[in-house]
Image 1: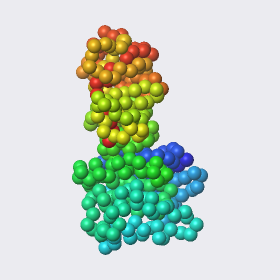
Image 2: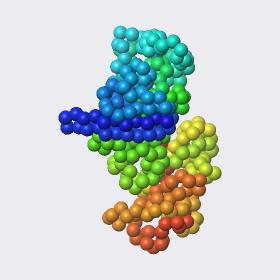
Image 3: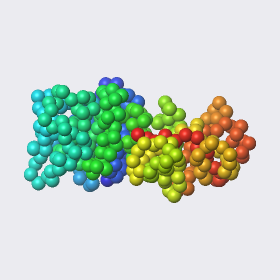
Image 4: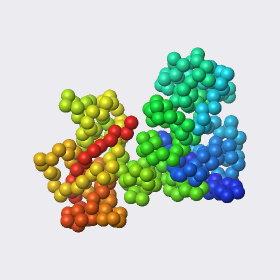
Length: 349
C-alpha cells in the first residue's frame, strides 16, 4: 500500500492532502488549475518540504532526500540535456544507479517507446512528442518505484499528443511501475487512469476507481462534456460488414469500423445522452445495441431531465439521460429491470 498525508502552507494557498491505495496501475490527480495537483506530486517526490507522512509498502519515505526515494519524475517540459544524444540522455540515470539495484533492460524500454531510430540523434532536434517519450524512458531507466508524470501533454500540440498517448496508455502495464498522472483534462483521465484522486482548493476530496468515478452524476469529470460511462472489455476482429464486437462480461457491444487489432483490451465511452431506455427489446429499429439493465438510482437533473444510473450484467455501470416525462411514462424506479438502447459507442483511443 501507499499512504500519503501532506500539509503545506504558502501565502494564499494551503495543501491538506491525504490518500491511501494499492500502488499499482495509473492514478490520475484531477482537478482545476491551481488546486494543488502539482504540489502534491512534488511532495511525493520530495521536491517540496511538507509536514505529514509517506509510507510505501510499509517503508517510511517521509523526510528522505529525493534520490533515496527512487521515484521517476517527468515534468511538463521534457527538460532533456540538449547537448547530449538521445542515447546519452536515456542512460544518464541508468549509469548512476547504486550497486544492488536491478537495472532495467535498456533495449526493452527503448523498443517499446519507439526510440530505437532516434538513439544517435541530438536531443535538441526532437519533436515535442519525441522529447517526452525520451523523458519517460530516462525516468523508467532509473528503476523507479513510482513514476510521477506532471501534465506531460500540456505543452504539446494536438499531433504530438496523439503521438505520445498510446505509449503513456500502456506505460504502467509494460514497465510494471505504478504511475501518478497529473491532469485537468477529463479525456486523459478516461483514457489512461485506473483510479482518480479528485482535488479542489488544496484538498483531496475523494479517491475512486475510474468506473465508480464515472458512475456518479455529480462527477467533476462531467463538468465540460456531460455525463458518460466507461466500459472495459476486449475488441474482437472486425467483421466483413464493418462491425467490430466489443466483448465484456459475456455481452457484446457493436462498434462500427473500430480500426484496432482484435484481441486488444479496450475501453469504450458512452455518453448518457446516447442511451435510451425501453421496457422490452425493440424490433425494427436501426440501433445495434440493446442490453439488459437494472436501475440503481434516478437523479433529477433539472430542466425536465433525469439521469438514470443502471447496472449491466456483470456489474459495470451505465448512465442514461431521459426526460422526466419519459421516466414518468415508463414508471422508472430503483430496482427495475429494463433495456438500454445505445445509439453511439466511442472507442477510447
